[in-house]
Image 1 (cartoon, rainbow, N blue to C red):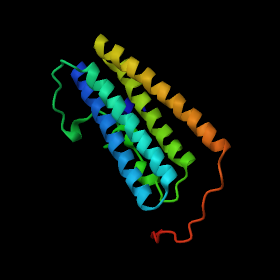
Image 2 (cartoon, rainbow, N blue to C red; image 1 turned 30 degrees about the horizontal axis):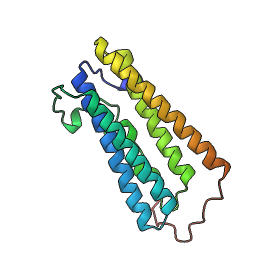
Image 3 (cartoon, rainbow, N blue to C red; image 1 turned 120 degrees about the vertical axis):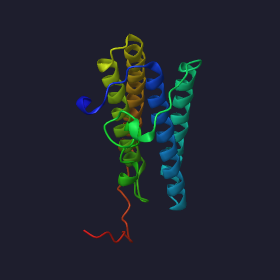
Image 4 (cartoon, helix red, strand yellow; image 1 turned 120 degrees about the horizontal axis):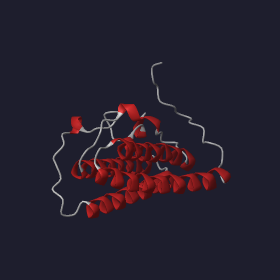
Length: 175
């Protein structure tokens, strides 16, 4: 995985990546929350809304860290992650269904937090800038704490899990 990321060499570039990662994650969680509300899946809608709020809080933390720093403008296609989307927003729409349960939503969020942690860990290992390595290392530790939190939420949800609801009207998707 680390070989597919490009190197980040300045604090400004690191913070722009971190802001994009958190804002995009929060936006996608909020979109999923609205979609779940439309489908009357209030439990999962509330969970995605909570994840969106947490993402926005993380973005504010990054903004505080970047305070006073001139941040570069980076075109969407010039971000240095391994896929077109940021690490914390990967697969959100592909794995979401209107009958999604809270444990499945948490599995998706956990997968994305792990990808975010791994992104920052790669930056912490690969940058030639000491300041970038230190800040990325701190961000990787913060993401590790988020991973632990989601693992605990998932454990609690899984213990109380009911069987997945049966989709009586599945989508007609060509195979």
